[in-house]
Amino acid sequence: MASKFTAAAAFLVVFPIALAILYPPQGLSLPPTIPGSHDLLNSSQVLPVDGAMGPESLAFDPNGGGPYTGVADGRILRWDGEGRGWVEFAVTTQHRKDCVRPFAPELEHICGRPLGLRFDKKTGDLYIADAYLGFFVVGPAGGLATPLITEAEGHPFLFTNDMDVDEKEDVIYFSDTSTSFYRRQFLTSILSGDKTGKLMKYDKSSKQLTVLLRDLAFANGVALSKDGSFVLVAETASCRITRLWLQGPIAGKKDIFADLPGFPDNIRRNQNGEFWVALHAKRGTFARLALSNTIIGNMLLKLPLSFRQLHSLIVGRPHATILKLSEEAKVLDVLEDTEGKVLRFPSEVEERDGKLWIGSVLMPFVGVYNI
Ligand SMILES: *[C@@H]1O[C@H](CO)[C@@H](O)[C@H](O)[C@H]1NC(C)=O
Image (cartoon, rainbow, N blue to C red):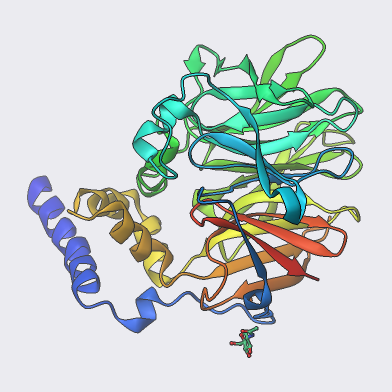
């Protein structure tokens, strides 16, 4: 009886999915529209990363140099302006003789895959969340970075993702996306309903590690509020940003900061204390269906689809969407390239001197948009 029921349920789920794949109806693959959004990101400039791929995070050093960015072959590059272009700044491993292809996910555990980057403005040290190798630091001269932490509670980090530095308190908040899946399995993590993400705190002077939040649905971008009273962590799989209070009457409590129209990646604060959130993609009808129940997600994973096919089913037609949120989570602006003419799959927005620097985990360039 139970198995008959399961088989019937499976058929009901797989049949429409198979149909949708064979005959993709426009409505399912089209990303939804966001009322009041400005379709302006197609006027962005594009700054290629010299044949490299996937500049995920961007950071400027305390002297305004950069941006620095981590690319898919494991290197951290620095932009030295039009004349010198991108120069190699740092790496997280010495074992790089095979790391010659711009995009080789199967080598990421060897070559490293730097994601979140942040400078400690007091010391000029660069902190690096390497998805595979852990949490690193490198001095202002660059070179080979030093590992700081590579595991929590006996489990090695599989997917260190992002961080923010509190220079006043001398602590760093950082996320590990999953204790079950590597970065190159990010679709599996999302579709299988994995909720093993963590937000942690590293105390620089005592070298003490504290797990602050666990059971997060794809813990991703991390950002502190301007006054340090709360820290945000993006939960990509549930299209939401979670807030953990650090000070005040409800310190230690968490709540939902914002529900979003898509899958948030990194969060970066501007000088006014507002937050730029990059959406990897908006959540369309198909993604909503696929993520509504882990049975559906797990069935999708069993279909003979390549990564590219599965990814395009979930995200629909390529596009770029970024949002500016106030400290109270009010949506202040939504900027898009709805047709993905210039920008696609943004991973981070760094506001600097009237420009937005826009990274992407899948594109071979950084976007630059004049506000
Ligand atoms: C950007 O897209 C908008 C809306 O599709 C269009 O009106 C505009 O001409 C485009 N701008 C550029 C620079 O391509």
